[in-house]
Length: 444
Ligand code: NDP
Ligand code: 2IT
Image (cartoon, rainbow, N blue to C red; front, side, top):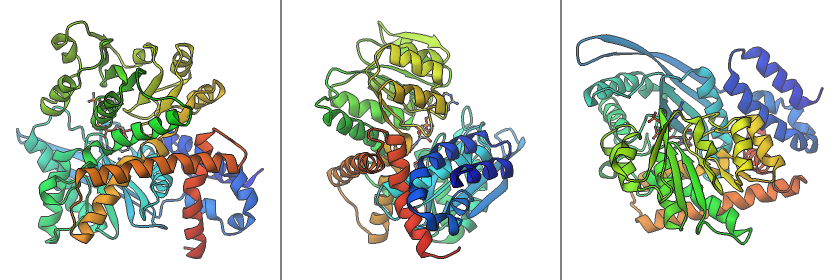
């Protein structure tokens, strides 16, 4: 059995019932095969065994009181996965589906993603099975305060810097920051995605979606093509989806469909993003509303059907495993040429295989959605330097980072004889720096 296979078997045995973690680890470790063959010293140093074992896992109780006086208890998590190249960095997810497997898959992905940005950030992830949907602002505030009352002792601007993810946006970051500042008496860059009035960075809100489109644009450009006139389907209607839509439209694309967890909308005249923003960002209502407000658009119950809408470019921006093999086949049959992953691990392993076999340009999440965390690192730089860059400065840096990541993964894939396989390219390009740093640090 190969070294990689051995580590993978061991990982599954030691961490049973963690399917998402197994899935991410399988994709990643399989890509490392040619790298460990070239570097036999890695096996001697048990580098992969250490790489897949989080440095620290924190799990805690989050009790809170609702508006009627009812007492609730949620689970809180922070997985501090790898700090070889910088302080742990990664988002917090608040969603009822959150469990240890999901936080670990996200944390593992984050290590390589953060390395790909070229900035000094390690990998971590956290969250809770708390559902912010349908809760009042006061309930969300009390939950965030309770969550931070435990988390504060484990994080710090040079230790671990959380940010947002599903269910954690500007409102939640504000409450979390307020509680951290109150307990620690420190106004520092301990969270990113902060409001502009208290240390945030311009472009952070837009960064993941814009970055995804910048990378896809570069992939198109390298094939003498562009977004102009392309039909685009975007899943989700949250932070990443909205700003991917905004930038794709600015580049001349026709975005025809979006969804939330209840169903999808189709608007062949092009999605009216101001209506989506009003529904999702301002009213926190359901995407279904769109069809009642925009003539000529349609609403369909259920999410999966969105992948039957014909498109040239698909940008999954909601959640893990939203595209299975069947949906991938349907997309291919209807002519999809580019898939850019805005969400983390939105395609199953089988779906990726379908895309790659069909010659679809497949831009994997850890590369394609790295713009968010990259801009978080730019926020950290501005916090430590007591600086505030203009929108244009941050946007230009973000674009440059996304173009660089594209070429780095393209080069890495070529270097290992797998031209066009960006899954392998991104994993290998991300791993290089982490492996080098871990080797330099000795057995720790
Ligand atoms: P948001 O909470 O802003 O939006 C999430 C969107 O996805 C919503 O439309 C939500 O629908 C939908 N969604 C969530 N879970 C499911 C589900 N189980 N089934 C169907 N739809 C679902 O989150 P973000 O936009 O921030 O995150 C989206 C994805 O992008 C995630 O995978 C996240 O990890 C990833 N990501 C985010 C980054 C960031 O900077 N925010 C950076 C890099 C990656 P509903 O409203 O109905 O729940
Ligand atoms: O998945 C991700 O990269 C994020 N949710 C953003 C993390 C961050 O620290 O900005």
